[in-house]
Structure formats: structure tokens, C-alpha cells
Image 1 (cartoon, rainbow, N blue to C red):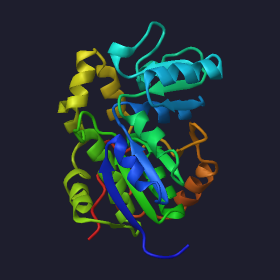
Image 2 (cartoon, one colour; image 1 turned 180 degrees about the vertical axis):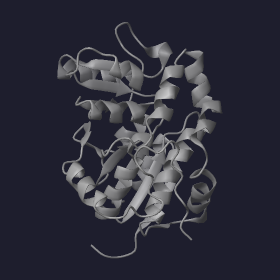
Image 3 (cartoon, rainbow, N blue to C red; image 1 turned 90 degrees about the vertical axis):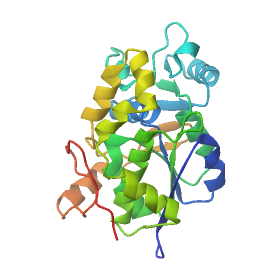
Length: 268
């Protein structure tokens, strides 16, 4: 497939409906839905986003012995865990599916479901996601979850880094606002997010360990996560593709695995 490759960055769950005709939608909710779902896939769990806590409970009941994670502490029932990558890694049952209801991120994913291809990304899998998008798609939209009408700083950082990676692989931004967001946020040190509103909410819940997890796990996974048929799962063949890429120079601007704070350069 030839032709011009473009991308756009936007935010909020309702925005997904405007982009269902695109080749691909990438959903980002760093704190904490997308990080938890990507971690669940890495751990070998079936990962199921739900638009609401009630929907999560219904999906869990239908799937049998599932772990229910609810991001909003006020709506969490006994036996349910937070939408937390740390809480997930501490579970002793390694095989039960995870059904997760975020505040906004999983609603975004469910809204995007009718699109041709839907991906879930966080700081753990930016490079792998960028490479996959560049190989398989031409018109990409990257959507941050947003919260209370606010495009949170951690999601702006992640969407900007995805956009910077795409620009360095031949994509162009569809509009000046997207290019401006990439320029402003792609090289910001990730520690800035610890001062944001989402981080403050985690701190009030005593969940500083989730912030630490996010900051310590940067592009550590060669894992592309696709949302289809109601669940998030690994795209087959990514490990083989990563091995091929390792034999070739990494294009500039694509964050490297193991970097403390990957900062992709911005293509002219």
C-alpha cells in the first residue's frame, strides 16, 4: 500500500466516534488503564476493557473466574482491585482474565472498537507500536483518554512520543495543533507527570508505587497490543519483526528499549 502517511492526535472518549474511518486508532491512558492492560497482556492474561464498572462485572460473570479492576475507588466493590499495574503483578492467580473499567480510558477503547484497527499503548510499548503502525497503516489517530475535560500531561507525553516516532518513519501531521503538541511534549522529561493531576489522585490513594512502576518501565516491551473481539491481545509476529529490526539500524527518533527517558527527535 503506497501513498502519503498521516497522523493526528486528539483526546477524550467521545472523540473516537469521529475517527472510525481511519486505518488505525491508538488509545492511550497512561494512568492507569492502558499501562495495566498492556502489563496484563505481557503477563499472559486475557485483558478485557469495560466501559463502566457495571459492564466490567457483567463481562466478568460471563467469562467465569475473572479479576475485576475498577479505577474509581468510590465505585470499587469488595474483592475488586484498582486499575493498577502493581496490583496486577502481585496477584497469585496468573491465569484468570482481567476485566478492567477505567474512568475514561476503557470507555475510549470501547468507543473505538468499530474502527478498522484499534491499539492500546502506554510508555511500555511505544517503539513497538510505532514500528507496527508504520508497517501496516497510513492514516493513524492517536487518542488520549483525557479526564474531566483535561488532556492530562502523561497522556500528552505518550501521544507526542508516538507521534514523534511516526514522523521519523515518514508520517506527517494532519494539522498544526498535532505538530505543536509533538514539539511541546515529545522531549519532556517523564518525571514531570508526577506533578500532574492524575499523579495527585494516585498519591491521595497511597499508590505512589504505580507512579514508580510507570517511570521504571519505559519501552521495555516489544509488544503491540490490539483491541479486537472484546479483548486486548498481543499482535502475532511482533517478536520476529523486532528481531529483524535489531539487525538494522534503529531509525532516529524511535525510543530505545531500556532508555531511562526516551526523547525522540522531531522531524523537520
